[in-house]
Length: 238
Picture 1 (cartoon, rainbow, N blue to C red):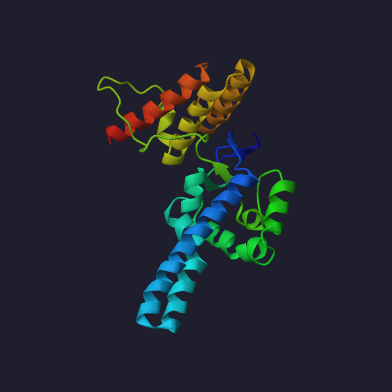
Picture 2: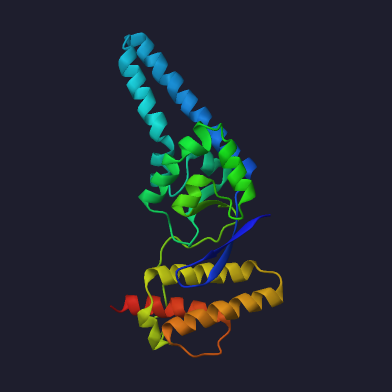
């Protein structure tokens, strides 16, 4: 299974399984099917009403912006991508903004429409990050969601009433840091190779320790959970 190593803004690298070409083509075909059903529905309505010009307008606009709208409001997914359990993400680990989706959408003309998808398939297969031209320019890629690191639905979680702050430096932590810590913990839990797990954990811990100015010999997984608990304690008592 091809993976991409995503270097986060905190300089910690996480591995995400890339969506295969087959999965991306399947998602595209599903979305095409949905657009076809929509077009048929609109056609039937306006065939009865006898308004061909309005039909063309109402049919063209939604189909043109289908991908852009769904990816923007469905967190990097279209209905086809959701069914195939894949999504768009940035190669630096952050969530894409509207302009990232806009660039991908604009270059669908080159990647897919004008070349019948040949340009997209070639660049995805040849490149190491599973990117078509639009992805390269937007600095995005498409990854699997059924294997990607999962986060809890909220940043904040409960801590015991008698909890005591472990690292005063945790006051420097922001929301994005907590998301990273959760991703690191989840990735550590999925790693079977003990040497690889220890190497990754110590490297991630070292970079975060340097960033926050912390010195500790606490095991990596416990270290990151402690930072999350400290963050929640501090925000609970604001």
